[in-house]
Image (cartoon, rainbow over all chains, first blue to last red):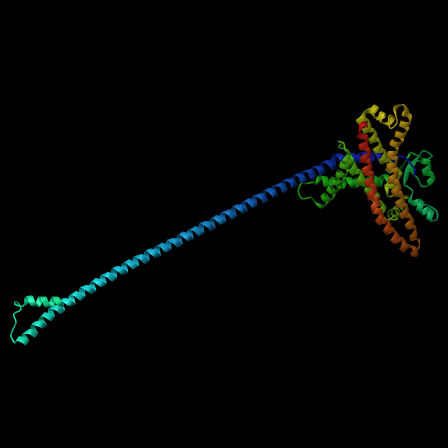
Length: 156
Length: 281
């Protein structure tokens, strides 16, 4: 345990190592640390912002979806009511047309009935004339009894 | 190994002797082979083993850290960069909490002190016989591989720190201010001889305690390793010795780290005090 020149040698080595560390080691490493710190800070900030944007976009998408559903519902409603209208209209038309057809048929029937009645009246007057001739045994002038026959047929 | 029969005493002595190169009494320069020659050399000698291991480990530190510094990227760091950055930011935080002034030199110096002393202390965990025995086989009579068990090494660093304390004290306070701090404190001015004595002792005690604390801890630790190694003489004690060496080594991991840390923090604290102006205390 002798104190000798080693102490000076160690002092010189110490000074050199400290100088070297201060010059070539500390600044680049600290620089890299600071730069990375900055980059990470920036990255976190950007991630937060992206998160916010994503949430906003999600909310926007939800809103658009709700609106689309709403308008789809409206369109369906409109279509439904339009279909109802068309059906009602068609029904109305059909009923009216049926009514018309029925009325026409009724008129036709009535016309047929009165025509048949006319025919029957004609035939009846003939029958009456024939009957009367048989009863009287002579011919009956149709022209003389035209008035009476007309009355008869009118009673039918 | 040293000449003569191998006794416990000679074994311990051998392990505690540095490889010394210096001026012999006849004026020639060369390696000392006996204690007498070492004593004759006095101050004009150098512990070659201490210097080589110390500088070598310093270069290991600088190489690893320079490599990391060269490749430092702001992107994803490599494992090496991670480790180095962890160390750098640990030192940076420690210095921020102990040193409250602006000085670009303190933090790099603290890093150097911490890592370098740690590496030198780490040599204490290498089994005590390996490298000295290898050296003997290669024809080198002595080889002490733990530089911090050499007071020259620890005191060399402590006095370098002391020089920095003086330089920064004078730079911050001026010669008068620094003298005033030593002479007019803590007693009134007319008692300045007492003040000067008290403050002078306080000032000089700083580097001495700084250097001797590190030396004492590591020297004692090394001594215990050597004493344990003595147990390998017979098979019966060798097993006990192995267990003891393992236990002491585990405990020593704590000591070597702690001593490096203490040296770093005290260096920062002393230099912080050197920057403090008189009003601060």
